[in-house]
Amino acid sequence: MATRATILNVLLLTSLQLLLTCHVTLAAGGKWDLLLSNVGISAMHMQLLPNGRVVMFDRTNFGPSNISLPNGKCRDNPQDAVSRIDCTAHSIEYNVASNKVRPLTVQSNTWCSSGSLRPDGVLVQTGGDRDGELKARTFTPCDNDECDWVEINNGLARRRWYASNHILPNGQQIVIGGQAQFNYEFFPKTTSPNVIALPFLAETSDRGEENNLYPYVFLNTDGNLFIFANNRAILFNYVNNTVVKTYPTIPGGDPRSYPSTGSAVLLPLKNLEADKIDAEVLVCGGAPKGSFIAAFRRKTFVKALDTCARIKINDETPQWTVEKMPHARVMGDMTLLPNGEVLLINGGSAGSAAWELGREPVFVPDLYHPENPVNSRFESLNPSTIPRMYHSTAILLPDGRVLVGGSNPHAFYEFTNVLFPTELSLEAFSPAYLEPESAKLRPKIVSPKSQSTIAYGTNLKVKFTVAGNVKGPIKVTMVFPSFTTHSFSMNQRLLVLDNVRVKRIGSGLRGLFGKSKDYEVQVRTPRSAIIAPPGYYMMFVVNENIPSEGIWVRLQ
Ligand SMILES: *[C@@H]1O[C@H](CO)[C@@H](O)[C@H](O)[C@H]1NC(C)=O
Ligand SMILES: *[C@@H]1O[C@H](CO)[C@@H](O)[C@H](O)[C@H]1NC(C)=O
Image (cartoon, rainbow, N blue to C red; front, side, top):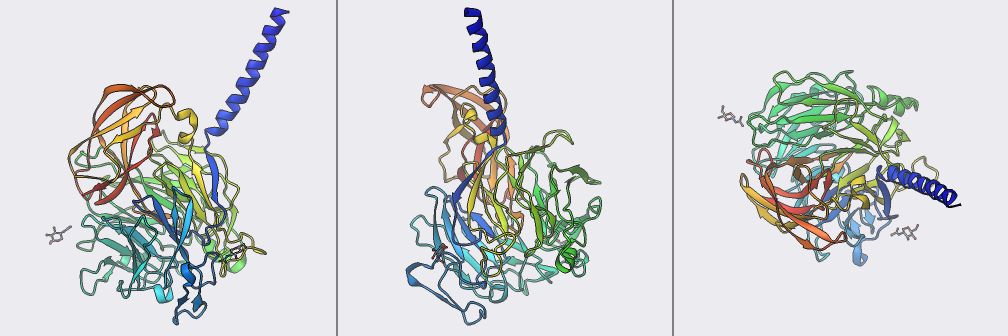
């Protein structure tokens, strides 16, 4: 009898373990949470602010949204033929901590615009459509719910619709391209006439389809800009207006930028003290040439591209390495996670960007491990249930979650009788590192305090606690909060700080697991504003790939 009971017990245990194993396997793929089912607008553009709030906006000239302007205010814009009087908001502030939204007031059209955080944490947004095309707008973060947009007439020298911005080492921003604009300018304006020709944009514009809008722009570690449009890239000296290097055409030659929208990231920058930093760019997805025209004219939805191409941009003779993705993806977002991994999320696997032209939503996010060998870098994660097609967005939050919103907004917010109805919900994707199983490994930063100012090129002591033991090397990372729209996160940049040393500085009785251990890691802050433009960064301590919650530091 005893033996039988034991066997039964063993069997029970085994099935229990199996169940647990199944659960763990699922959990390893992350988790989705619906944060709010209706934020009132379509989250077409998103920017995280250094006070932990997120500004979002869509466009002003497509009818009333689902959130009213405060205090009975209305917008009366004689230049807006479609919705001259509109008492609803087309921009909101999302308070991550309270999970609440507040309506904001934009007067002119912000549709398909661009932006960047200024070094002082103020959001500067540029351009849009029609009455908004020459506007610049600022939003100064506040904690008292009183701040709102300020609009600057003729902030821009040229109409900027589908342009890309990048923060520069001197704290200004460069605004590159936009529809029918084969040039760039600076904000604030510095030169006169402040418009400088960029023939590369004319060369990469496909007739009828363009395929060079929202170019992927990254500040290289040598001070030049890496600019990718359509199917190729240049290294560009924006000070002297010279092309420093022309990169090979991406293998296969298919376009990767709007409307053949893929996405791109500058992979984590590391060994920052080296003379030459091995900066790498990863471009993923997109649509074969002609996909936009096929979808628009013939309602034929071509399968999206299922490849990524990666290149070391500082090599003497740079070459693209092509990798296959688990899913074909157009209009996907690429988000750098605090541990240096890349999340590919949102989009569809057929058709093209632009209104109603995407098909076959990809519900499964794919995680890219840049440090793994080729062919073992992708991992598919748990799916969402909400299609996130054209005009969807994803940004990293300081707590390590990824905020996801937007999708086809449709002209005049359509909730019925359309393929992908206007989506007003906000979701959070929590990567596996946020699972309770990782709590023992998760560091908690004790100092510096959030909102501290840090200097360039100094040794910085970061104190943190961990419940379990620290076994491997500790990583300290800094992430610049990006302006995200149309599958591209402008200014997205992750720095892995050079690690000087880690030491145990005692232990205390605290936390869920009893003993929590105190450590100090000494890191080198970035040596220059070229490597890390001035401004607010989220700083994370990463232990065995598990990141702490981020704190804000201001680098200056
Ligand atoms: C938002 O939608 C809800 C549900 O359809 C509706 O009751 C409400 O009046 C709408 N609000 C605005 C400001 O449009
Ligand atoms: C631009 O050109 C001038 C004159 O040749 C040179 O002195 C300067 O260093 C250049 N600047 C950059 C950033 O290349």
